[in-house]
Length: 137
Image (cartoon, rainbow, N blue to C red; front, side):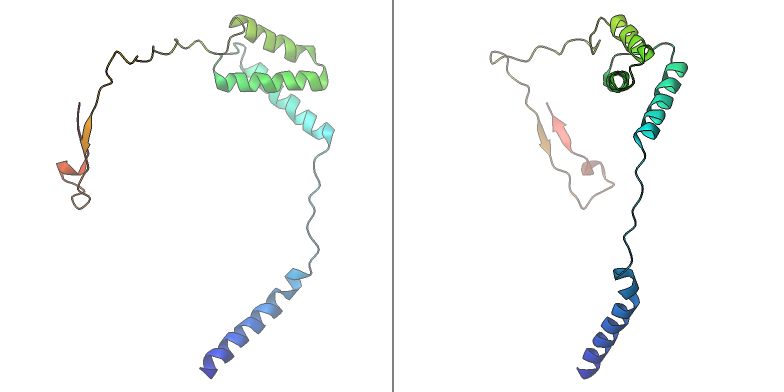
């Protein structure tokens, strides 16, 4: 028992002396980029996108997200070309966000919902045909 206490105390003493210089080290402060540097990167990204995509593309959420950022960049910089590119995209899609077909009509209470029953697989038989759920409609 004494040996265990001795070894635990020695380990704690060794760890505290090894980590002491780290506890008193000055915190690292990373300089944040300036506003001009951030705007320069935003312009570079937008200019690359506009140059690489003469056809702005679909109006699904990924492109819509880019164009909301492009409009924010226009408000920040006042560059008319960003607004013109976004306006062309929006007018090409009649200012709509999706061209997906409307969702199917939900079933009413007069129409019964299909029911299914599934048997649970036996976890002990991983590679057998019975290891997958069996469902019947």
